[in-house]
Image (tube, rainbow, N blue to C red; front, side, top):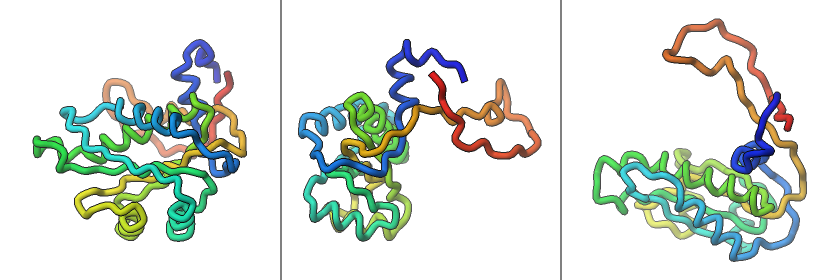
Length: 193
């Protein structure tokens, strides 16, 4: 697939963003974690409600609990960011309905910004699985009105993955949705610069 992403650093970062599951032992600098949080808080928010809150975890004991107790949480990253929704932060009841979308946008900003900082990330979904929510609430000390949407492991990657897109033109409609014959799923379409 041809692309002009090399001329566009934003697209380049998006295509290079991959789920990294192996990390070095090198700790992530506080300054870089703060930059990731600034990127998260730059995300759009429905009616500017800003329901997102974040718990940064670097304590090895807490990280070990995530690894042991979360079924998809066994990653050796030296830090994690718990992306949380707190709908009570909004005075607008209608905006409270969109905390999942707002927090998802914030999490995606973390994932993309990490690429530009030379970091690797992987997003572990927490909400809406009740048991996962309970575990993360307990480990991170979250009150009942704050819901963890996801956990983003952050660290220096110990593995390299090629940039890619998973573009599938069969899933794109122009002007209106139309019924189509089912087609075999395209797996891991590679992005070629």
